[in-house]
Structure formats: C-alpha cells, structure tokens
Length: 183
Image (cartoon, rainbow, N blue to C red; front, side):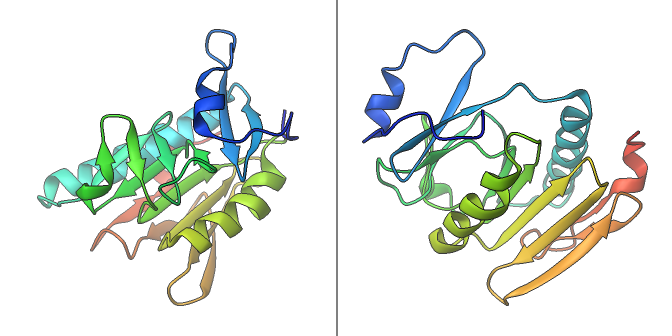
C-alpha cells in the first residue's frame, strides 16, 4: 500500500475516486498513495499523543488547535499535495477552513507502519520541511523510538517510549510516553 498507484493531477481527481468504505488516500506531487488500516499500537500512540497535546493546549488556554487524522492538509495550499497526518497542530487559524488546512501545520506527528515507513521517512519528511512545518515527530512503534526534527534549527533528537518528549511549538508541552503504557 505504500507505493504510488497511478499519476493523479489534482485533489479533485482524488475526491472523484471510488474508494471502498474506510479507505483513505493521500496525494503527494500528483501521485496517489493509499493509506492502510492502522494497528492497535498505532492507534494507542496516536490517542496518547493527541490527548497530551489537547490537554496541554486546553490547560494553558493556548491558541493552537490539534487535529487527528483524517484532517486534510493541503501542504502548499494547492491541489498537488494533500496529506492526512496522524496528528497535526495548527496555530495560524487563517489556514483552517471546513475542508481542513491550507498550508503547513506547525507540528506534524506521523506513526510509521511497514507500508508507510519509506514515505513518512523520506517523501513526507522532505515535503513537510519544504512547506514550512516547524517540528516533525516520526514515531516508529516497531522499534519503540521517535525522532523529533526541529526544522527551523536543523536539529534532530531521538527519544524512546520511556522518555518525556518536549515540543517547541506549544510552549511547555512535554509528552510523557512512559505514561502511555505502550506494549
């Protein structure tokens, strides 16, 4: 499911696809990619990270909004690249409309799977960086690690599922992976 299926041209073409119920797809540089069904551990990670970010924003009266997939993101506010990150944080509310986000979120979280690993690690990494995402969390549930890419400072940090992971996007946010009881 990680390979491009066929050449697409726009999001309109993607929207006109007759996909089976529950099937999702992304469009990157005009190429269509089907998104597989997530595993239980994938969902536990997404739920735990979303919960931590949402609570932090709510407790601190933050202006940012956090969304869980399937929120549509047009990375370059055009019709050639449409992604649905596992989690994204958007602080510029002018980017939001009823269909999703037009432009780069400040923070993107992707949980890899065997079918998405190369796309998440290479293709999406490059697209998120080029679009202006400030921080990219790439979580590998098979290895119990996550890499945090701070694109503005060109720094990377590696964490394990026993660590507390800070974010520069939401002031004071620290996600404690040990509290998620991931097994």
